[in-house]
Image 1: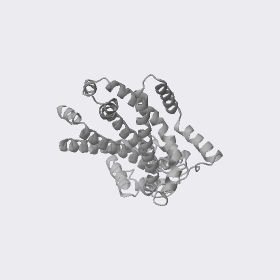
Image 2: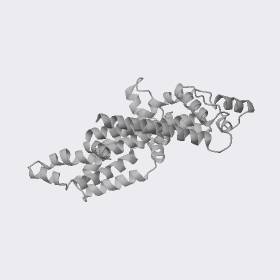
Image 3: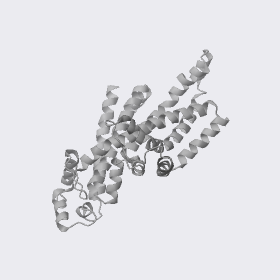
Image 4: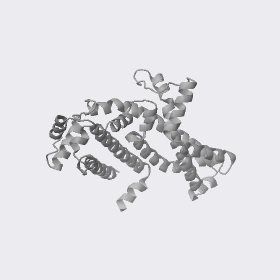
Amino acid sequence: MARFVVRRLLAMIFVLFAVSVLTFTIFNVIPNGDPAVRMAGKQPTEEQIEQIRQTWSFDEPVTTQYVVTMKKLFSGDMISYTTQTDVVEEIVKGLPRTLSLSIGAAILWMAFGVGFGLLSAMKAGGVRDKLLTVIALIGVSMPVFWIGALFNYYLGFKLGIFPNGGYVPFTENPIDWAYHLILPWFALSILFIGVYSRVLRGNILDTINEDYVRTARAKGLSERTVLLKHVLRNSLIPIVTLWGLDFAVVIGGGAILTETVFDLQGVGQYAADSIGQLDQPPIIAVTMFGAFFVVIVNAIVDIGYAALDPRVRLGESAG
C-alpha cells in the first residue's frame, strides 16, 4: 500500500507540473498577439502595457516567463489589472462559499442518488422503478441555471419561502448559512441525483446474480442482509469513484452557473466575472486552482479506492 501511495503521489506531482505548463502555454505562448495587450484588459494605455511586459518578463525566454508566472501565483503576488485586487486573496475569499455549495450538494446527490437507485433496483420493472426512472430522466434533462432560476423565482420571489440568493458565513450563523444554501444545493445536485440513481440501479442489477450473492442466499441470509451487505456494498465502489471525480470537477469550476444564479460570490463567479472583463491574471489563477484541485482530489480518491479494493494495487503492480 505504501508503494502505491508513493507512486500515486509522484504521478500527481508530474500531472500538476504538466497542467501548469499547459495552462501557461495556452495563455502566454500560443500565437495570438501580444500577451501584455491581452492581459491589460479592454482599454489599456501604452504605459500599462509596457509595465505588464516588464513585470511578467515577456521580453525574456519562455522558461523565464513560466517561472515568473508560477512565482507570482504561488507567492500571492498576482494582481488583477481590472480591479487592482490581489487575485489569490480573492480566490481565498470566495473559496468557503464554493466549498459550502459543493460539499452540501455532493452530500445531497450521493444520499438521494443511492436511495433512489436502491429503491428502483429492489422492484426493477415495477411501477416504482418506472416512476423513479422518469424522475431521474427529468432531472438529468434540466439545465442547472434553469432549475436555479425557477427555484429563485417561485420559492424565493413569489412565495418568499427561501432567500433570493446571497451567502451567510457558517461561523456567523450556521442555521442562516444552511437556509441560504438549500436552493443552490438542490439546484446543483438534481442532475447528479438522476445520473447516480441510474448508474447504481444498473450496478445492483448486474451484481445481484453473481455467484457470491447466490451463496449468501443459500446460507439462509435474509434478502435485506444480502442486498445491503453484499450487493449494495460492491455496487457502491464505482459510485464512490464517480463521486470523487464529480466533486472535484464541481469545485474546479462546475459550480459557476449555480454561483452566478444565486449570487454566491464564490470562486466560480469570480472566474465568470473575470472572463467577462478579459482580466487574464484571475483567469489564469482560477484555471490553475481548478486543475490542481481536480488532480489532488483524484489522487485522494485513487488512494482510498486502493485501500478499499486490494485488486487495484495488485493490478498496478502487475502492470
